[in-house]
Length: 180
Image (cartoon, rainbow, N blue to C red; front, top):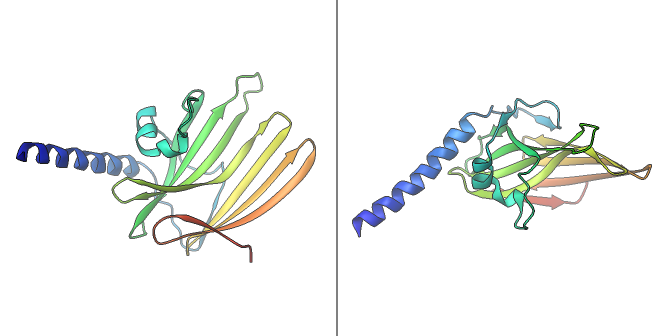
């Protein structure tokens, strides 16, 4: 019985250690006042599919489609200053099969417990083309953990705009707030 309990404890510590190793490779984002989150300015660390499945399976979804096929996942940064959770910046890049070589990019802001358990995520930046649509979304993350998401997209030559405000609560969840 003692051997079984010890082995379960050792496995849990291994997960926590591998999470610590994974995020140690990401650059700490300095959040003095605010930071713009877009699909351009990140020092990216490519993640292998095992890490993506292990730590970010909630983003991949539960359907049978293989979200790892023709896609690359990169850890762009981390904010570890909150006492209850870490915020990670994850970039998903989807390669196009056509000759344009264009890639759609989605950046997620993900809250994780300090030991690596997924809490919540929000798509905070999107760039790319899909059929007759063009997407360009950027966000601002403020020191008080407020996120302003600015979405601009064009569908069939018709422009659309949306502004959304989120607040990250003490448990690491993204809460949609009315715009001020």
